Length: 169
Image (cartoon, rainbow, N blue to C red; front, top):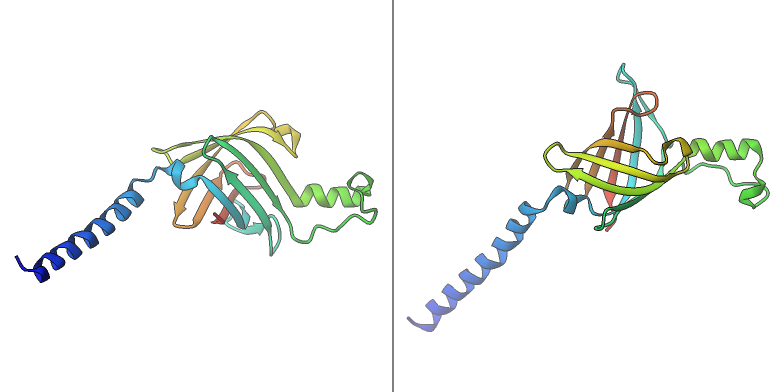
């Protein structure tokens, strides 16, 4: 074999090996591995039984959802137009300011797990801005496509809630 043939064989083999593991690994990622990471809010909509949609956090929602590898999560979602407190002190808000914050913000944390077969994410809430949900489990159907995460909660307030997140990291 001459040098040219050896080099061609080496280059072809190297290219094949470089391409093969990347595509194989991507196909083998579990749902948990796909979900783990930091996500930012794109939209959160309530869908009524008649099909009408209502944005739960306004036209420009803000939010973060973090799933760590150990099974812990934190989620904070908020309207971008929640008014600032005139007193500049969170303990000194007026009843109207406090109402705007409660209606325009969702925050909770706890543990999470996924059922790979049914594509269901279960959140076990330890603490919640809405105290009635602390200590409860909630299930959501889940879909991951590239850098997009879709969560659907059929038991949402006023109808099904659909949340779309974009991978931040």
